Image 1 (cartoon, rainbow, N blue to C red):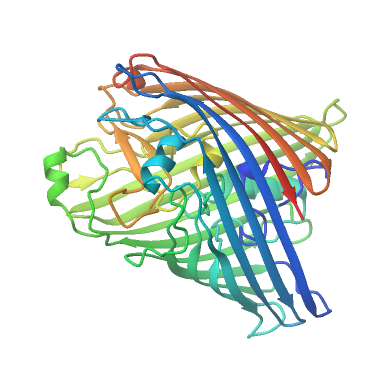
Image 2: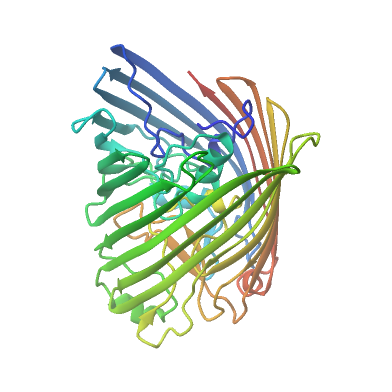
Length: 485
């Protein structure tokens, strides 16, 4: 897990995958031998979803435990790593899913629906070999592992590490580590360092997981290929970098896609999804007399086929931040706009909704009732670090649909063969006003191996949510203990 800016306190485990899982390879130590590691995470979640008409269970709590045990053998040239994962789900809601447009009301409903009464699992989370077949500066990983796009580059400062992990990475591919099962990828990843430029090539198939306790099996009809080149923006003081990337995604599962076409038409379209995404990012930090300023841009365009439809979509983000020098609590103020295109006409023979195929939505939607499809998200946030042990964060989001003719989407991508598509959609009611979200988190690290995290999020829904639910206020909160050993 990368250190938070300034050292000491770190971000909650729930907010990001560990740095080694997100693509930052640890240097192989000079010695040889075995290392044993593990973690235990216990979380109590409270959901008070937007209330529907009728007697469904929109308000509930449940508990989840996640145990990971791993062993790694390292040498000067390669390593072998094996990790076992054991999730347990306790007191899931049994009546938290309703007929359309109500759908699943929170993650408790998603876990319950995915597991047919099963409440625990055990599977191989990671099993891979990593070596340097082309030289000491190149790294090849083969097997089962967690992969996140967007964080391939080495980041020399904690601020830049945080921006990569929290504001750039996992928009398209990530392990969805907030869930209690998570997602892995069976395949390969190659990192090539040539001077100050890093090349990344990866490909494979995802595992089941996320909400499905059967995390051992794969999804053989879902495939991806990824390539990127990342380079520092400044040759002398590397306080920024730029990346160009390409992602190919193919989904040939025999299921019904989620989009804004009428249900009868969607049911007849079983053709594959085949999408190429081209894009890039640039992020830069400046040290000024008044403090440190940061800015980032991220953009992507998509072409391909959405079943029988031609797919054309785009997305763009711009964010700025400021850390004033000498202020108590070492604050970091940030603001930005994230826009993901929607589809303006369900009958025109094309699909215009930007598609984040295997994303980690919870990084960008901490109360995850929305995701990075057909969305315009304007936000401000403040982060305080009053001591090395504490990190406090508060966000405000103004959420609108990018196109009112499209749906309100939620989800994080494929995690079952069928019937789940991985994203759900609710009607907009002809409006673009989705919600306003205020949230707060506090992380306390009493020791290096322990994190305590509290999160509280309150959403006030607009006309979009009002078209599906009787009461449009929602709440999500959790308390989590994470112990690493």
